[in-house]
Amino acid sequence: MTLDTATKAGLEDVVVATSSICYLDGRRGVLAYRGYDIHDLAEHATFEEVCYLLWHGRLPNRAELGELQSQLVTSRRLPEGVLRLLRSLPPSNAMDALRTVVSALSHFDSGANDMSPVGRYRTSVAMTAQLGSVVAISARIAAGGGVIDPDPALSHAANFLYMLTGKRPSQLEARALDVALVLHADHEFNASTFAARVCAATLTDVHSAMVAAIGALKGPLHGGANADVMNLLLGVGQDATDEKIEETIRARLGRKEKIPGFGHRVYRTEDPRATHLRRMSEELCRRTGNLRWFEISQKIEQVVKAQKNLNANVDFYSATTYYALGIPVDVFTPVFAVSRISGWTAHVLEQYANNRLIRPRAEYTGPQYPQTYIPLDRR
Ligand SMILES: CC(C)(COP(=O)(O)OP(=O)(O)OC[C@H]1O[C@@H](n2cnc3c(N)ncnc32)[C@H](O)[C@@H]1OP(=O)(O)O)[C@@H](O)C(=O)NCCC(=O)NCCS
Image (cartoon, rainbow, N blue to C red; front, side, top):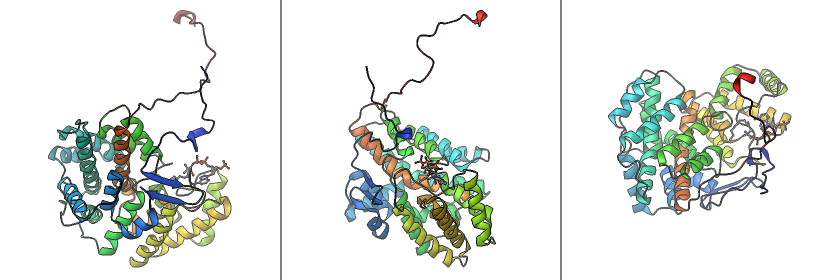
């Protein structure tokens, strides 16, 4: 039997399934959820509206949005056993803690293995709400702070900042994170979403698919890049001159190192999400009275463009946006997950609804068949 060979490494440009959730045109720099352009959504929609849009395929009316908001609010509180587990974990990478605790959540959810459409949807909503709480509480425990109870009067974004920092955010801060969550919510068949779909296609439960996605997101080529960007900026230092910044970037490129926050598998233009994050980063840095991280970012962007003709991606300006919001660097990638779980769950719901096991083939390149088996004492 002859097999079709995907000639491009990393499945570049290989279309592996149909999906009605996310439209991406890398040549024109277009991103749309269910047909709605990301620029319109970033300007007008809330994260909760986007969740509804991704899960149901259309925007909610006021009553539908209200119902979803109260379902999310109801699910924010974590079971006592999960809080105990969070407190018992040794200091570790925040994504490791998130992966472990999301897996543990299923033990405290009697409906976790309810694979009916209603059950899968209920789990998706609950996990989206819980993820924000897990990330905020885990960060507070890591910093030696007390756990803050969720505030039902706050939006998903505002409540997350409140549970993380212990301060009710200003309108600007809450909206900035809300927009960041809208921008990160879905991105077609990115690595973590694909991992989630592969998992779901075995008809395993939603929690298992989310754990797979979180594992994929952690990597520095995917969601891990936002923390790497901030560590790059901190390494360069606030007082660095333009010459020093240029020298640092050139040296890294000279060693063939990747600059985090640049390049993209799909976009050949500017990542449309970066346009909003750049603006937000500038505005938030200005409000904190320290524009320096934004200015350094701009200089790095200029050097990388000149040297490699690469554009900033979603992770580049989300770093300084989160930093200006007072989010600890270790928590940047978990914040990506707080948003992307809406897209992951939309994709697994789509997969379950029209499922076939995802089981591709490999082109074999190992030793020639057949090899003669040599008994152990003659090798
Ligand atoms: C996103 C990314 C993984 C896409 O990878 P990809 O499509 O497999 O592209 P490649 O890694 O094959 O890169 C193609 C070329 O661009 C270069 N390149 C890509 N991203 C680069 C970066 N961030 N810094 C420096 N060079 C980069 C590669 O070195 C390669 O150059 P070469 O052909 O001279 O060897 C890649 O751009 C990257 O690693 N970026 C940094 C991490 C990051 O920001 N990830 C978040 C993505 S949203």
